[in-house]
Image (cartoon, rainbow, N blue to C red; front, side, top):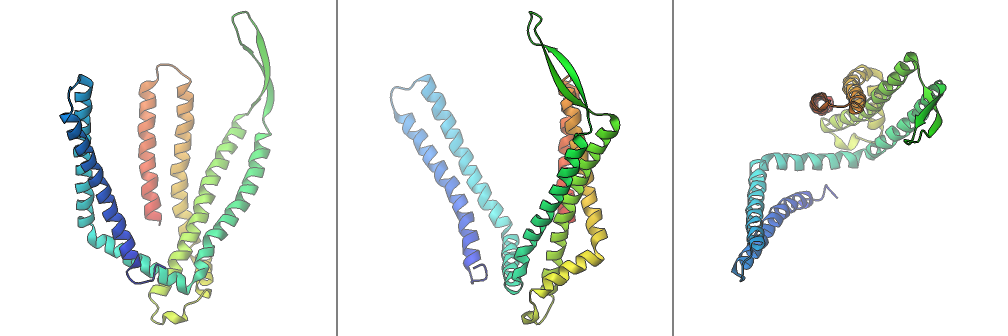
Length: 273
């Protein structure tokens, strides 16, 4: 469908015009409603405040409509380039339908990894020692005794290691699919005889990734896994601090660090792709 002439262009620009129109129509309706309320008599203090807020909202909607139109005009060439890229992607998929199955292969590999990872994680969690703790539940001295798991430092470190492995392998499997698709599509794009391209090229791209580029894939996914692991550690520290009192400054600093790491993770994901 994407390869049909003008279909993609019409759909995209109709969507953009629709967004601009929705903001403009909503602003016009809100402004007309405010004007209608202003003509009604008598006016009350609440009604006057409501009219003012409605009028301000109409100006905000008009500004959003103008801003959307301005952005669309400024990025006109970029949008057209994106349209052409999507059309080329449609032609590539038409010659190599097997590209659709790479995400399914990733899902199967991820499911297999989850089974193995879950088995070892549950086994690791069962290594804790069982202790009994007594808690007082009311002022009359009523106590409740419960059994809890406690883990030594070695098991705790192993648990963190399992979390890191989960982040790394998940990013690794995702990156393999991205690399394979990139190789297949780039080979198709720079091939003069497009009719010679078939599904075997996808298998060849996957084989090329597994044979020559696993180091690149592993390194990129390692960087992402490190950042995600640091975010997980910060979440753990934040929960510990939350149990304390008068730690608002530390909590704020941890939130700032979490935000910075989130931005770094997004940048690494972009660069990795």
